[in-house]
Length: 324
Image 1: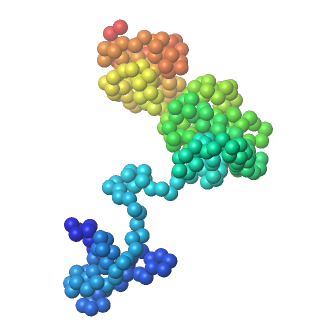
Image 2: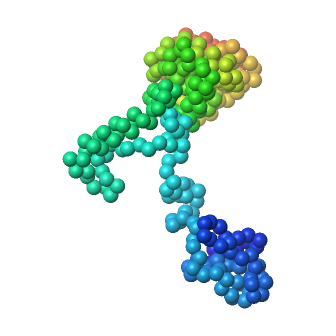
Image 3: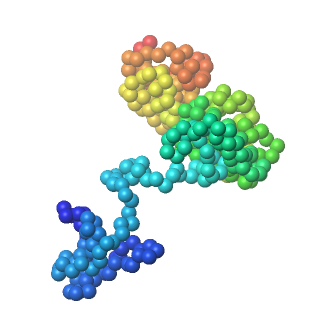
């Protein structure tokens, strides 16, 4: 757009067409020039060569707000919330809020609140029309509860909801508890999104046994053909260091130790959390931010014996010098 509030029209293009809107001419009817400019201040289409006004009182089809980047454009758009897989109807149905306010923000009179309560109740009932939607509504509410308790990001929740919906479509829910399938979907989603969580962590929040979650997860990966790579010790380093309140230097050193251990195939056949905990313990000693084996073990969810065994393997095979 120029300083005079004008934007050039691309040659060969036309104005946005809609119902009752005539497409803008491509060339000037007087001199034949294709250098046309839209004057948004006056609502006119002007020829740059001869100054002829080709159209006037044009309708602006764009939004009535201005945005200077994509983030502002998303915030100022008024098209409603995007669809989401974490709601059984994907968020497409109407939801009556619990604030007793009218569209103008005024309080609703007491005599009308009983009617509004009935509207809310029936709206909540008709949102679930059959057994499948009832199953999804309960399962996705449980999924959101577990994900909130574990502080998992939005993309993990969306992926878990997608996996659960696939399981429903393939009729894998029959004969299994909804909570177990939800926990297994969330575990698979964490691995797929590179936000790994252990089975013990998910079992603690879902109140489902670790064995049942693992059994259901293996069954779902086989039936749905989910191709998930094994978790690496490096995937746990950032979270463990954050919970132990260690500096970035310790995290960097831990990743260096794990990289060298992976190259020498010292991590194969070992639990990733135990190897990551041992590397963090070694790095904390080398960087002068000592953490005890018990502190590291509590954060990583492993025993102190596991950390000692992995510690001995890494220091002996890699020749690491550690001052206790």
